[in-house]
Amino acid sequence: MTPEETLRLKLAHLRAEHRDLDAAIEAMHARPAPDMLAIRRLKKRKLALRDEIARIEDLLTPDIIA
Image (cartoon, rainbow, N blue to C red):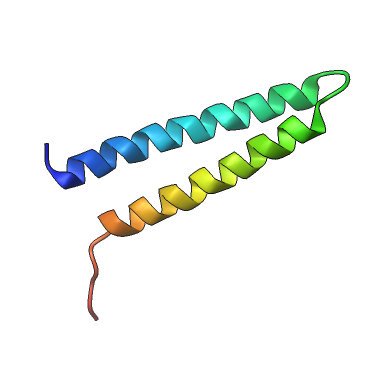
């Protein structure tokens, strides 16, 4: 497996985890008494995933010199 394929697999995994966190956050908000501390932790994890996704996307995007 090439390094690029490895990055693409990691990217797919991170995107899936990001979507799962989004669903979990929505489900927690729907509860009668949502645990705001847990929601805050999930949101921080989601932001960290977004940063990691952006970093990997940047690595996979070829540099085009104009």
